[in-house]
Image 1 (cartoon, rainbow, N blue to C red):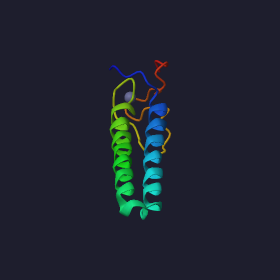
Image 2: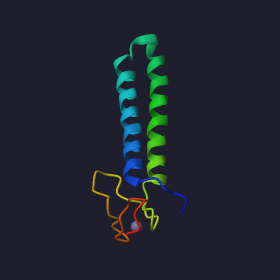
Image 3: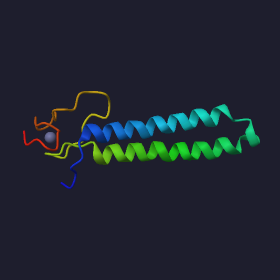
Length: 94
Ligand SMILES: [Zn+2]
């Protein structure tokens, strides 16, 4: 496996990107009357990129460094892999 990032950090980055997408949606909705919604459509497009990136990022990166299984993407504790029982800290062997 060529995946040495801590899955907890990867999940935090994914959540940050997802929240960024929601914030852009909020901004787009708030200024829907500017330029007859053109600005909003552009912002929705940007938000869609953020959300797509966050989902792809988490599916690729939030994985156990030992067995490669996809870990919980919700706010469960993933410090221990539920599949192989090892720590998900990439610097730990157990
Ligand atoms: Zn595992």
